[in-house]
Length: 60
Image (tube, rainbow, N blue to C red):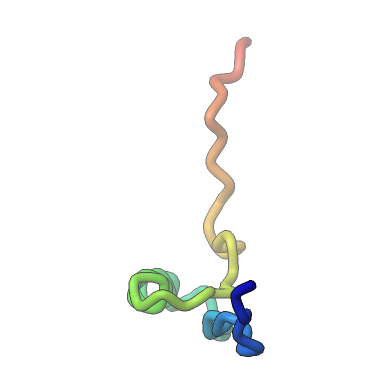
């Protein structure tokens, strides 16, 4: 019978990006950098200051 280690696998670091969506490009860059470093990133999912773009054409 093999002895199992009592150490749990390490959990990834969680990073929260906070700030104004006025700096959306900088938030996106920081998100990419942190994600590439193996961290879990919590950040705004959309820019509420930009008009919503629809993917469906409206029929008239």
